[in-house]
Amino acid sequence: MRSSVHGAQWTLAMTLTLVALVTRGTSGQEPSSAQVDAIFSQFDGPGSVGCALGVARDGRFLYKKGYGYANLDWDIPITPNTVFYVGSVSKQFTAASIALLAQDGKLDLDADVREYLPEMMQHSPAVTVRHLIHHTGGVSDMYRVMRENDISTWDQFSREEALRLLAHQELDFPPGERYAYSNGGYFLLSMIVQRASGKTLKEYAQEKIFGPLGMNDTHFHDNPMHIVPRRAMSYMPHADGGFVQSYQGNFALPGAGGLYSTVDDLLKWNQNFATGQVGGGAVQTLIHTKGRLNSGETLDYAFAIREGEHKGLRTLGHTGSFMGFKAYYVRFPDQRFSTW
Image (cartoon, rainbow, N blue to C red; front, side, top):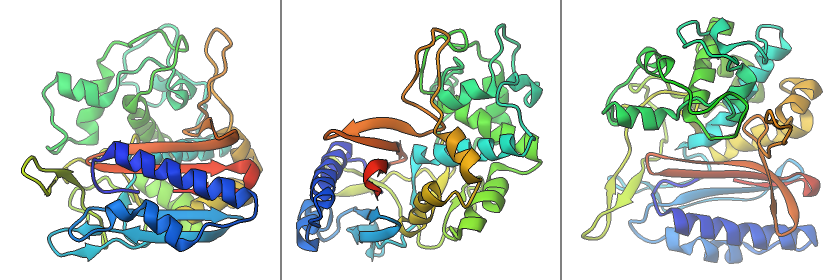
């Protein structure tokens, strides 16, 4: 998890780390701390924005550490307990909330979204909850619609205002015809959680996921005034050298994003894939079920879990990027290995 906008450097560092840890780890040889530190040394200099890293196998950390600074005003270093905004990694928790509601009989995945959000325009065929989960509903991306309506993510913008804005948008394509990643769809899922449960996404996820798993430093951020202890700020490079702050503190629309968490807390989420403590085996099966198009084509995207491949090894994960923060959470299920 990272707090600046050097995306290419971050991706390269993560890839190198995964190569080193996975290939060595699967052969029983763990890399030394010095080898990992060398990969991340570019983020660990004086006055540098930085990142936090967690690497785990079989439910225990092999490595966890923070590099650089969480706050350049006060020279506060990053640690595994630093709280980061994780961008679209949030979608896993939004999708899991939907799955839990479906398991409890409070929500029908194949229902028209208008059953929960009657404000939405009527479409034929209907956009279903399942379409939103798999990004196949044709719902416009929220951030694109905001830009087109001159609404800045630097300003306060309520959930109700966002819902009204999306409710009157035409679809980009007929539901189920293709996959197109949509932050708008996942924001709508957050509102469906609220309508189906009577609780905000923040409240529902706390009650059903974060509380039971002991993820005490994790929450969906739906109040811009909420004080977050040990929060990392985000930065971007300045043309004259150094960094300037890029954190957009007024934006608080959870669902597509909005989650704050730590390296330590994400280990607890990671373990739930193995234990099924929250939701049990039925929910685990559901959230790993991939989407399908009308044509019958199966997607690589399940409930905000994307299947991929790295160096010949199967991966399951999600990335996140917003406000200068970058996050990457990936599991190697066959090796019982994860990193974030």
